[in-house]
Length: 121
Image 1 (cartoon, helix red, strand yellow):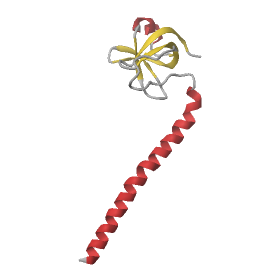
Image 2 (image 1 turned 180 degrees about the vertical axis):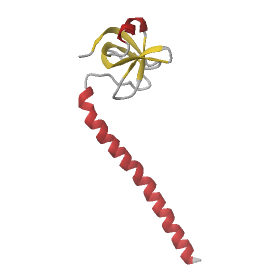
Image 3 (image 1 turned 90 degrees about the horizontal axis):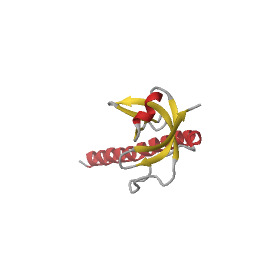
Image 4 (image 1 turned 60 degrees about the vertical axis):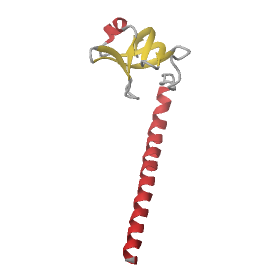
């Protein structure tokens, strides 16, 4: 019986150690991936904290204009996030093309309040 309890405790300890180490290793790998991608996107906006409604200053958003569920959206290739546009008719001519949009992000609705749109170089 004592031998059984010893093996059981050892198995539990191994499982606990593995469950602690695996997420840490994954998080560290994710940090390295995001650190290498960060310098490429220095001017692009990020989604603000959940308490904010709209970004204070206009920011530049880069990505590809696509149709998604009957909506015209800006798809960010790095973050894999799609942003709705407050003026989809203005973006319609750019469907399938890479663009830069200047505007403010409404975080509650994930909508970019567009000020300007231009083809990306």
